[in-house]
Image (tube, rainbow, N blue to C red):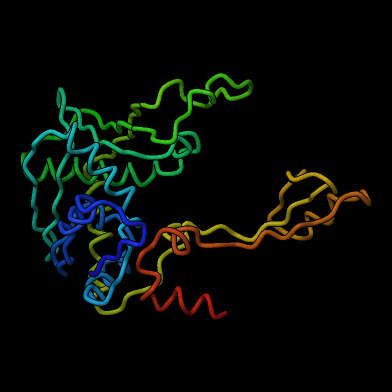
Length: 273
């Protein structure tokens, strides 16, 4: 992987990225295990030809920086399962509780948009701990550092969901060991099959937004109502001052966040359609 530095970021940020390494086919970290298999496949296949800018990893660098300040120096756990070596490293353990640190947007908390992914990740760590030490964690927590939090938002009326501080600890539901093991085996099977026959990422993995139809009032910027079908929108808008705005669907992760879209055959194919 080659890095550019179009925005002239300092050398210490550029050199930090040298720690990223090419994935190995049968060695997989928990974050990769719960993610789309196609991502690992494309990284392995196109590692030497990928060209990305340092700024594409800026949020990753911020997250790693926060981890280095507060993360306990815990040993990595490696477990052999179904022909793979699964690797996991917990951030903090306190009173037999597992705590994972996340630097993220305040809107991730408000909309609970990543809670399912967090549950998968922390339950995999719990599964690893049981397999290695025969000891489950008591509870699972996420410590969220909200890097776009604004104090002014806490004082606005009608903003009751906005957190009072830029830090929030949330408890993650803990699965049974049987549920955890079933999930791990299912994910390993997906990654194993992808080595020979990689499939397109799922709609959830692409953060896909469907096409919607917004009923707008002339002169207003905000929609009166947004519908999933054109027929619903047409049935709703009766006034001559209203009109329907078509909001095209998009794959947010593919378009704006995935560095692999430059080599992804599915992304290129979808763009041609």
